[in-house]
Amino acid sequence: MGELVRTAGGWSLTARQEVHAELLPELDSPAERLAWHSSTEEVIGHIRLYEEDVPDLLINRSGRLVKTSLAPAGTASA
Picture 1: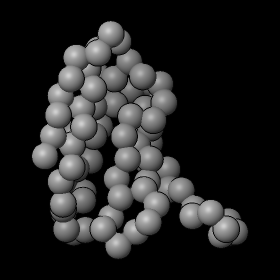
Picture 2: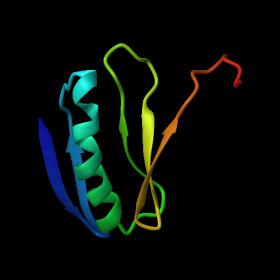
Picture 3: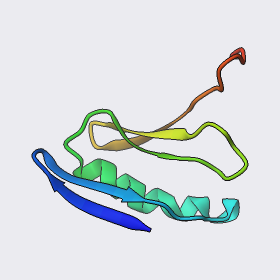
Picture 4: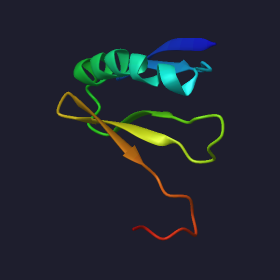
């Protein structure tokens, strides 16, 4: 499922796709291109594995994709 919408600031893409964990590296290239073309210098998306409650954030840092894992509430960071 997906939706591409033109907004006042550009475009917004919403997509949901179930992917097996071993295929996740194949999503890196499209996500990197999204970051390169994004004018948003912040969170541009997230990925959540089916078994996980908390997503990993996809962040644009000057055209580079940065993935940040979030810790569920109530857990201590190591």
